[in-house]
Structure formats: C-alpha cells, structure tokens
Image 1: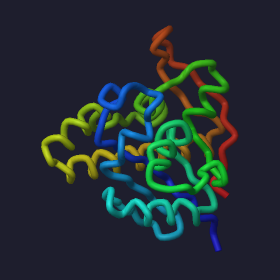
Image 2: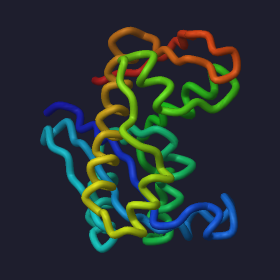
Image 3: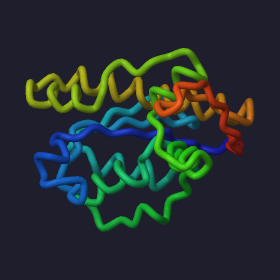
Image 4: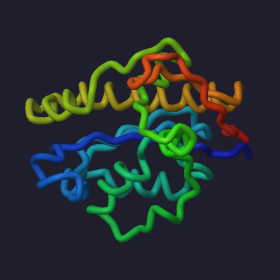
Length: 182
C-alpha cells in the first residue's frame, strides 16, 4: 500500500493579539482544519467540534506535511488533546526552508515563485470571516492553502529545489530540498 501523506492546515478563531500574544497560540482555538490524504485522494474539512477526528487522521498518517504546522497548527491543537504531536512523522516545509536560508518565508512567496500560484487570502481575512460567520469561505481558503502546500511539496520532491522571491533582497532565489513522496 502506498504511503499516506496527509497535508494539513488550520485556521483559528482568534488572533495572537486577542489571546495575549504569540506565547498563547493554544488559546487561539481552531475554526476550521483541512487535510488532504494521498491514500484517499480526498480533502476533509473539520469544524471545531470535529477536532478529535482531525487529530485521529493526523495520528494515522505515514507523514504529515504542512507549512509552519509544527510551531503553529499543532500548538493550536494542543488545546484540545493530550496527544503529543512530536510523535508524528512530519515535514514542515517552512521549517525546512528556514533552516537553509536563515529566516522565515511565507507559503505565498514559495508557491508564487515555484508554481506561479498565489494564496487566495490571508489568515487575518479568515479571522474576519470567522467573526462574520462565513465558515464556508474559511474552509475554501484553508483547502486552497492545503493544495498549495501539496503542490509545493510535490514540486520540491520532483525538482530537488523550491524557489521564492526574497522579501529582503527582492531576488528570485532557489533553495535545494531533499523531499520525497515515497
């Protein structure tokens, strides 16, 4: 059976400012979580009341791939469980790139330079949608981020590199990566 790679992202109900700063990420609470499983070939959308099913899916993955999910998304999920996310086999694309270039870079910068695609919104817009009760807009945005993460991972695995336009030098930069789909 093929390896089950689960691509993952979530959005929150509250901003860092609303919970007293970035040291309180677990208080931000999940609004919507999205996964894409290579085993099923399907996206799954989870509301906050379904967070246990989301955690169950992540815990069964052969590999969880995300963009800043180790520092952020897993920390948000810690509010709901005693599960230790450090147990999971994981590839955080942002952390891997950050280790190589010495600073953080956004998914949008990598997706645009490597694939020619842009994110459809920003996390702050998702927070506004939450306050307006526009849950479907959050789900659609989060699905798109999961798809962008998947495409960046596949591009890096196929080419041994990803590209980004530096917000410091404004130059197109290539970063070697050793990502696998197997």
